[in-house]
Length: 597
Ligand code: GDP
Ligand code: MG
Image (cartoon, rainbow, N blue to C red; front, side, top):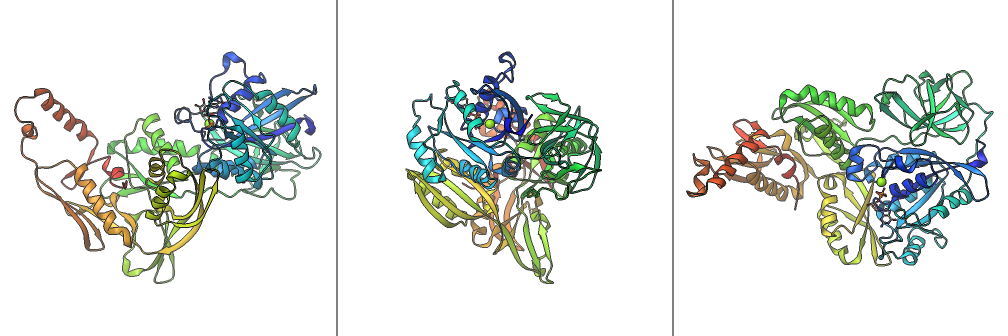
């Protein structure tokens, strides 16, 4: 295809504003997929994405569109994930296209991820087409939202296209606008091959599949290509495009987006953002690389049934094949036995992986407290990154500790602002900015990441009844008064429950933890002290009293069904418990104990 007839674009939106639905309509109305093959959210491949309604992997589709001027255009849409944890995937796919549809739900308005994503699009030099979606709903307020887009984002939204991705209203106008307003790509077919490695994933049938955007030159089947960053050379075995099913093509030229397979063993052997060129006639300079995504949240994953350790290893290795941003290494815990210390991009990423292990591999897991990476500066001048509070070195050798901070942007209706400020303040936040756009406030906070990883997002949603939106970026490390808090159950430290806390909040957290654990641990035949300690000093203590011999005794006589229920409950509880010394601790204790209310 000649360059003038190509348009490459992505869709940026806050979660639930209708990005996937709009993509479906664009695919359907152009006949890319026959109506009878159409299922909802074509681009959201994985089941878990469908269920949770989120898009995790960037997905691509090539659409042929016959415009009103009679010419046929190739439209390449790269779908991007909308959640904060996957911001890096957004930025990488943005670099492969020239424009974006900026989709805003006209019943809601601009939200935190609208902003985060639109700034990425602007950074990538995109032309933007504002789209107001969900105009079929009575609560739609297009004029107000268009004005808000102008106020908050600072782009002209007077010509915003009014769309219902549900009913199809405005879809023809959207397609025309893509052709009319987005720039065609540029590139030179005669220059040496320069292609961007946009994404890669493992396909059980094809092996590693690489998504590429050709900048210059022509890529053909059988070509020997070199990955410029790691120097590896591969023969191109298959080459094709997504419609959205894979379809073979002879070659890909400048401006085109497609896939190749090339006997690459692992996803890890491909570097997202790398430049692919011909081995024999390479281009001189690679494309500027992407910022690599690094795990920021760590936790231990242990099988509830220790005989499933090997199954867990296999599951984790398989998942990691397809997800280079997920890291793992073996871990042994005195309390939990063998497991893995895993690194994630954020809490959602953690939940997704944990869910998939439990669901797709049928392994029940104990998840330990999520932790961030602390920088522990030793008195001898060295720095040790600390991924696991259990590994905290002896305090006598420690000079100071630094923790990662984030810059969080929260948009919230006025009436909830007070609650949001209080929540941020409680989590050791420092307010950086507070502005208004219409009846919404936008606050920017500097927050310690460790105060956000447990349940910040859940709390934020609950104090604002779901009306707040949240986005963050990493801001670097800063020193603070951090200490390791250990939890002792029946005088034995439970390493999986130890955590790093701020000195000033340790007493409160310790108290909350032991009280929670007292509720979560069932009574035993003996008395169980539950303590929180810093170094050798106990800062909080509760005692779980001993159980009477007959568990059903407290049912006072008659009620047989209630007795039976109680016994059944006990039996079910048994399965999910782990023994610590002489004490059984239920699995949910490890997560629940850390939630702060
Ligand atoms: P995404 O998270 O941005 O991909 O949003 P989805 O496409 O998954 O849409 C979120 C929800 O809004 C789904 O329940 C859609 O059915 C619904 N939705 C999307 N577009 C429209 C629309 O134009 N009108 C109405 N009424 N609902 C829509
Ligand atoms: Mg979606």
